[in-house]
Length: 544
Image 1 (tube, rainbow, N blue to C red):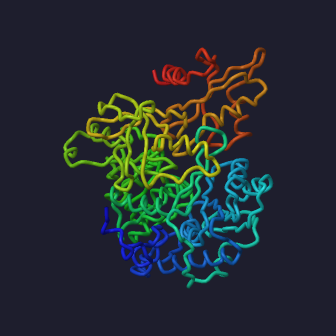
Image 2: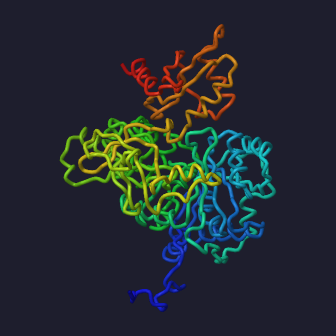
Image 3: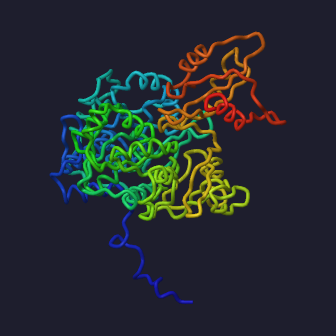
């Protein structure tokens, strides 16, 4: 049968098909709003024209230093302008941006550099201590570029050149984008997953583009937006907001440290309209000094994700005049792509009812084709009764390309044509999703994913410990913190503080268990630890 639409003259050509990539957003906004303030950092101000100039200088300078398409450029930095530059300048070269969690220890950083084949490392001198350790044990010898941020504490320079000197070598008129295919890798982000070694999640230009514009469908921003960087830029590329805010011509306000005084003062000084963060950030604001809270701008909008925020926190924050949007996602789906979308018919409900509705994870973004709660055995949707538990699964264009150098994990994650999140949830009669548990035993503390298996692996190395199991314990400040159940070898003795100190010496500080319980571990007939029983024990011990 002839298809009139398959004629040769209707083929894809340069005039009607260009790769979707979020790095094009900057060109458009710099053309339309060249003199508008794009970035604020302390006393520094960068217009969109200056921002684009720095991005082009960065890209051309990296190419001069030998960076080629497909290579990996790592960055470890606070939320500073250089990090925002990197979100455009690195992919402009065709290279892949690997943002490293600033809370990791040297061992994890070295693993990431080796596994991701780091060719260039941009490093904030504030973190030179841990970076120096990582470079000493890494097999890679990347080109190291120091970022000596004017608002930072300083630190030892480890590289061959400082960031501003690198920009001086570049060309602000450089326009040769090396993005030839929207399926090209744009970013590499490591997630702790369920094992000690993190998995490298690969993003495409197409996926990042779509998720960046998807945010604006569910959480509108525009050229009047003043966005505060309370969310770490290393988290899923700042949930794709470095591209979203530029696309609409908003202003990004940098923040080196997530400290309540700095947050609230920045909100007041810069008339912040939008910010993102884990529930712990909301709780910090909620407990700020009342004299500061009284000065907060009105109608601030906050997007939160991570461990589901308690309804009481949502209620308290909204009583301050901050409008909460609850979202949900994972590193593998470019950050949030599910939102608790508000409906006008809920406006007249009580504060408690509104808070409970907002605490649900919600429905898919318009840019994510399919999100559902499925029975993982039958792959059929669960009943919309708010009680039947299934696994949240995703399918669409804002799902990762896959795990770097891990074909087995990628195949398992994409089994039956869906991405399996490992998060257990119910579906309400209105189709809204609500998480009930995390089947992978990941602990989300202050927005950080912590692998219980990794902590257990360290604990098992202690000569006095016979067995260990780690589960999440609810925490008012952090959302969740690790709790370790410990069984000791016969004749051995340890104190809670000795175990915590041992962990501090062998892992990043945020992963260290905050609670130790000495107990025999309940097991199945095959010897598998029954973590559900440990969670119940926690409730009996601390919540009854």
